[in-house]
Length: 319
Ligand code: SF4
Image (cartoon, protein in one colour):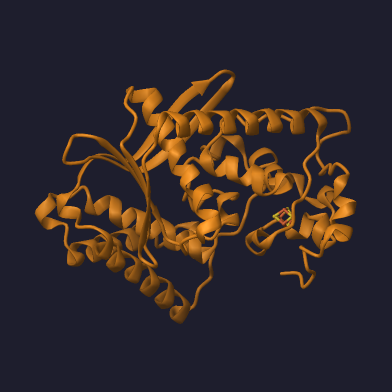
């Protein structure tokens, strides 16, 4: 990571008020719009338009990160746990589910690519185990009735397709829908809390549009603390979310039209894989290698789950 301070005051930021045109597209050629918008893409664009462009439009690859891989393992373990009958959802079986997830990921690039030695791997797996254990401090999975796990939802809003993958959708004791999202990073501070809940409100919106029912509760389970952030969606919060998503989409359309994606240095730069091409760190966007772009045929959709570790833009946020 560069030792330059990316948040060095308005003077340092002045130079970034000019449009940045990474290589691969000529001046005056409108950029292709992303085909869909997900919670992580929304937050990626608002966090830093240039990182969004590198990821969602240029589709530059990123190296795997231990935090993202750990998140994948924990999500997989909890998904497997909820496939078991309620009485079998114990800590012991959850750890067995984690072992199964680790085994199935042994040769996966997201694990192999970390190039961990035995000690590093043991540390990562130990962290994952602690997260699974702490999950049980938040709730008793035997009392939960999931009706969807890793549920992929998609709705159309005007010209825009919204997509998201819900970690868990369940019915509470009164038959109301509850949306749950697991987080394997640190819980946000109070200022950032509403932003993070906005991601889950996105899922609430998708549910309401697709199922015709607004969830009674959306919750983020931060396993490392452990702590739960909970909100009850309302007509007002749903409309606010819809307005925000529409505004972000309009801003993305404008940015593509003008080829104008500017860097926005912040603490998140520490997790950004594009620093070497970023003017805020002395890089040149036109150096971004064209031949490294991910092929659309093997991409899948990135960034559909707010905690999706494989999403390059979501990796800007500690998972
Ligand atoms: S290093 Fe920071 S400013 Fe530059 S693209 Fe990444 S997130 Fe944006």
